[in-house]
Image (cartoon, rainbow, N blue to C red; front, side):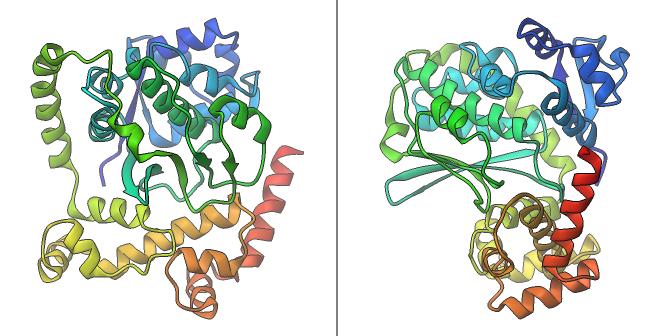
Amino acid sequence: MATEFVPVPGVVLDRLRALGVDVAHVLRHARLGASRFQSARAKLTVPEFFALWRALEAVGGRRDLALRLGGERQPHRLDVASLAALHSSNLGEAYQKFARYKRLVCGEAVSIETVDGEACLRFVWVHMDEALPMMLVEVTFATLLALACNGTGTKIVPRRVELARRRSDEAMLAEHFSCPVHFDASSDALVLEEKALERPFVTHNADLLEMLLPSLETALEQTSAKRSIADDVRTVLSRGMRGERPSVEKIAKEMRMSPRTLQRHLGTLGTSYQGLLDDVRRDTSRRLLAETDLDAGEVAFLLGFEELNSFSRAFHGWEGVTPMRWREAELKKRERITS
């Protein structure tokens, strides 16, 4: 896969300064040269982008920084996905556009699922085996909620927020989102009432969308051309690590092709469905063991293993140790870094 870059508009650093952040100190902590941000839109690799957010967590100052940044009344100034979303006809269309065009900005994947009266917006980052920086998740969900409130002109209250990490800052998060916050989740999710998706947008602008969307679709086609079917399979698998038993038939159906055709395409790329499934399971297991308090049996269930022993054997093959020994070593390593 080619190196992926994440554009960071200069306005983001300006807003951080306005919020009292010592940006120069943050950049030094992230080991990013200030010269990288002299243009209107800097381009960072994904590891550099993550390092920037982890530096904000470490030395950025106030813990609610991401919530304040994402909750601003003009999130559309930050990227094209938010701009297209804000001028949609209703909230459901806005979230669909946000998810679709966010791929033009970075490698994050936002999916919208409606089940049992709930609309669940899940947030994953493909090709990363480490956990997402906490503030990156928070700013994304705060942006999605601000988009809903600004677009509808009313206060939208989620049913809950699900976070794939240990319990921390619960009171702060619950106050901002005005809903319960669940920790040790399989993935990060913002959950709303499904009927909220029907809320009309007072910011709807059909003329602007008519001018904007053709160029976005062209850019999306160019971006999609650089992606392989293997990337798409990884994305679908990553979204499904929630206790579902993954099968090539189910993935192929979602990708609108036969299992045989999917396998053939993957073969031409030098990989296979099972190989990609193992990669996603390995990445997800490392993230859940490092960032949550889920036990090995719960992780095994979320990854779709029928038995704990099957997961333990697979994990030992990946890392050379059992899941619990790997967790212990990871926690000790983090303690040494922070001490």
